[in-house]
Image (cartoon, rainbow, N blue to C red; front, side, top):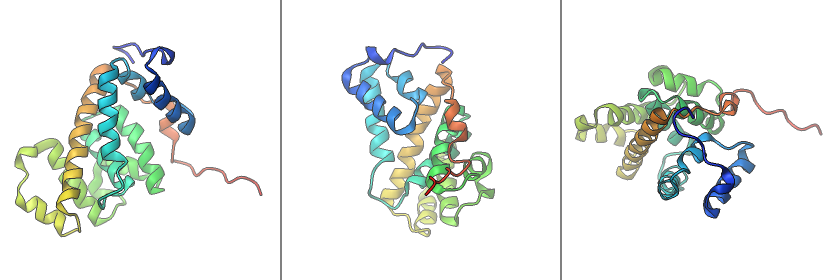
Length: 193
């Protein structure tokens, strides 16, 4: 964090401390975004409530991998190192493909993804870069791949939400945790029997 100091975890409100410790327990480290945004507790709560509503929902046809793929591709378009590295790691884990995040971040049109995912990312990048050009034909193209209007809302909302996140990470100088770079690249060793 080059521009804003991270708050001390123990100085944060109890609910925020509890959530951060839960994430730390699960991942083995505290992703920098959790502490960076915690300097403003009300904004932290709003940010993570909307994040969870978009990224953890169980309805709709978008998989968790699809959602992370949207974040990775649009964060690359926004030149957000933090989100490309962090969400790319999660994408690799969900998709069980060690190369997919790099491919999607550089050029999703050449990535090892399905035609449905390619159409999803074509739309997400249009929302990211030229939302004023979205038209009915874009909806029809997604409908042809099995997306319904609620899925299209989700693609749009994820893209828009992470546009905010990308800008905050870029301006604050948020650096990706070193742990993210290796996650999902090499299969975990199986325990000895």
